[in-house]
Amino acid sequence: MKEYEQNQQKNKEHYEKVYANYNLNNILYWLNNLEGYLDFVTNYETSWSALYQNDFRNRIKGKKVLEMGCGDCNNAAIMAALGARVYANDIASTSGKIVEQLNGSFDFSHPIVFVEGDFLNNDLASGSFDFVIGKAFLHHLSLPVEREFLKETARLLKTDGEARFFEPAVNSKLLDELRWYIPIGNRPSKFRGEAFRKWKEEDPHPDRSFSSAHFKKAVNEFFEECLIKPVGTLDRFRNLIKNRKWNGRYAKWALKNEQKLPLFLNSKFARSQLIVGKLPLK
Ligand SMILES: C[S@@+](CC[C@H](N)C(=O)[O-])C[C@H]1O[C@@H](n2cnc3c(N)ncnc32)[C@H](O)[C@@H]1O
Image 1 (cartoon, helix red, strand yellow):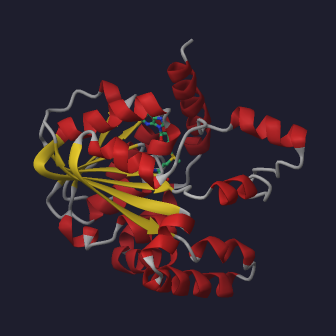
Image 2: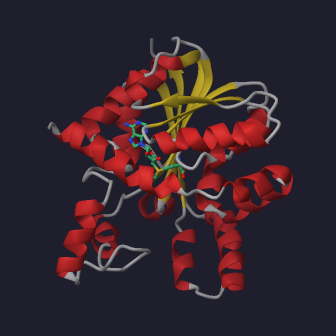
């Protein structure tokens, strides 16, 4: 099996399990409290704060939006509740089950359309989308495959359409090396050699560049404009605060105030980035 196929299969197997017993009640509660939920996540959560920048929330009403790698479909559902005509794609068929249940449980003005399987094998018409979104997605692809995804994104977008990707950012070699030694979630420290090796075998992320320079170059191959907004320079320290209340307060303060830092600091030390591609090259 080719490396590309191995990576796809690893992702599919991993995420089929992750979403198999997904509890829909959370999303339904958020959909029924839409404005409050969006106010909360865009102020306190890194990925939402980044992806929903520049009034994305109000710009998608009635627009045709494709989300690649929709995962648990939380974002796809929120976009649909905001009035967008959402197409949600994932290689994991369990995401399709979530979409089916969501459509049956919530009165979207446009029910979500699930596009099953590898994004590259979609059957969608060229130049038909206003937005193509990827939230924590591109970095799951090896570099040659990512190139194909960006090419496909440009094909699917209208000439005034926009691609928006929220991705991790690694622009400092030192920070990158250090992060492997700090355990996080189910990832053990690199100091624990055997446990780390086992975790790495299961991990669905290929070894590749996450640098802003890489993303800019990759996007610019298929888009005339590529804007990169670093996110999370101060927010990256939230994990050090264990108290829930103070963690939340710090996150909100950090996401707001880090925007006042000089760009060279944010570009070097941000944990994540919003990548926007405009004017797709046809
Ligand atoms: C980290 S998850 C992100 C999920 C969601 N966007 C979120 O923010 O929670 C990455 C998702 O990409 C999906 N994926 C990986 N490779 C894919 C491919 N080639 N085509 C479509 N989806 C893929 C995985 O199944 C998984 O749901």
